[in-house]
Image (cartoon, rainbow, N blue to C red; front, top):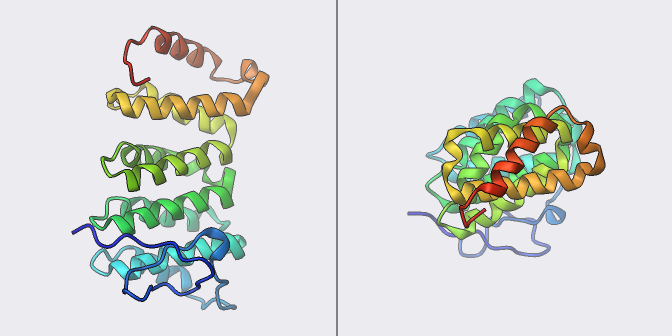
Length: 222
């Protein structure tokens, strides 16, 4: 089954509600981590993330990563640490438990906001994974994926974000009109963020060609 949906509980630092369902806390409600963290905390988090049979362990690890993003982002500034974490979190987006898949989307959102340009190198896996969920028939997941894509457009470096979105829009896999609509929304957000400097960006020719194609595109969803 898809599992119980996590409930939002204000001012509650516990991970479990009275009904035993995991609680997805808002960023501001996340409790600090016990300091100092044990030497092998990263290995422990990766082990939990990579154990699909222990869905609560995955949920707990995702919450711990969000707590690090909020209180101790300096713990993950090395790209060699960030990459395996992002790779594992992206894999959890495919969890059959919608509560866990949603927690992974929220975790990705918080990592994007906390690490900004450091997430540039992960866009090749983050964008397609979020895009798949943004067109998911489950609106519970699609809404969260939308929110994560918007955070990506605000957080990563402008040039890398634009190059990633242009690359996926040119990709033959993005023929789904709903996926193209989501990518077009991302593109619009990035163009607004860059402003007049867009005319000096390296991808201006590719962008101009794509915009011309979009204008000529009869797909009603875009």
